Amino acid sequence: MFLDAAATGPVRREAIEAMWPYLTGQFGNPSSHHGLGESAAAGLRGAREEVAGVLGCRPGEVIFTAGGTEAGNLAVKGIALARRSAEPGRRRLLISAVEHPAVQESAAYLQRRHGFDVDAVPVDADGRVQPAVFASLLEKAGQESGATNSTGSAGITGHWDVAMASVMYANNEVGTVQPIRELAAAAKAAGVYFHTDAVQAAGWLPVKVAELGVDALSLSGHKLGAPKGSGVLYLRGNVPADPLLHGGGQERGARSGTENVAFAVAFATALRLAELERETAAARVRSLQKKFIAEVLRRVPGSMLTGHATERLPTVASFCFPGTSGESVLLELERRSILCSSGSACAAGSDEPSAVLTAMGVRREVAQTAVRFSFGNSVTEAELGTAADAVVGSLEAIGRLQPGR
Ligand code: PLP
Image (cartoon, rainbow, N blue to C red; front, side, top):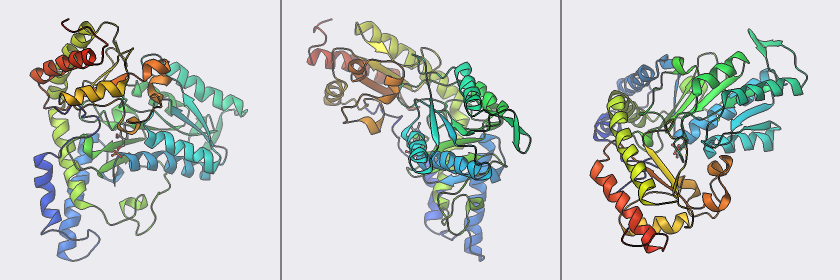
């Protein structure tokens, strides 16, 4: 049983059917001026409009990428470098302490190679960034560099040393949902561009960019029923971003390379359907999630749920089982045909405790006992009942629970 949907999922049939023609008969290059090229360009245009429809933005603000990692890199590096080249004093980044490596490592690279300062925005024990803390970091940045209200860039006043800020919408390891609207509003008030990594949120939470108030938002196809290696960065119209890839100037110059029309079409189809199904799926999966969490906590004394109790994705149930090692529980679960993970796919197999849990103040030895179950929209009550039994069976097998409870 696959309970690792936050890591990836299968491509949905509708997405395969929608992209098939662009892999076969309509294989043209969208930049070609003949009919075959034009039909590929029309497919790409349709996909862009479809994504824009879901995000509530203009089609020109949608940049197709090769996945969520590229979208996050383009947002962080692209915006930071472009902003600093326009205003050299802007050399500070505000990055939450629980970001996916796509964002975290982009910021670390800017620090290492381009002399940026990175302020890690702390989270509380539930994994949430407090808007007041975020606002005070924006404020602190301004004060430290002795900034007053500068009007360095068109109509923007305030904290002139911050190039951009990035806080994810929902966390991939513990499922905590951030108060994105408040954070984006604080950044806006300070004249700081704000990116959110919405890779785990899309399909489960609203993603209308104007309602969220964000300047940039990244998405990944393979969490939504589209192929791995497909993704999107929404970049608000007048937000500058240096490209990562230089070449023929495709995607408004933000992302050169012949467009992957088939994947763009598959992505758009999957995103549209996920959005269509979102409210019903979220309500159904949330009620199953609640039962599963209650069942595990009841049957495993001393276990703890990680992440926020209510402000969490319906799709993630993450626990620590003190007195075990996460890896041994995972092995036992797999012997019982339950596939899940110790947190993020990247951390799997490493002895290092999760940086997300550590940032939440979870002690190292407890963080090493983390197990994450994550659900797609096909999960059933019977499956989660079986999974809860398997958790108990696994903990009995490793001596953490007495058999026959
Ligand atoms: N951001 C988050 C929150 C993720 O969970 C992931 C995937 O694990 C990514 C970014 C990276 O997306 P991709 O796998 O498409 O590069």
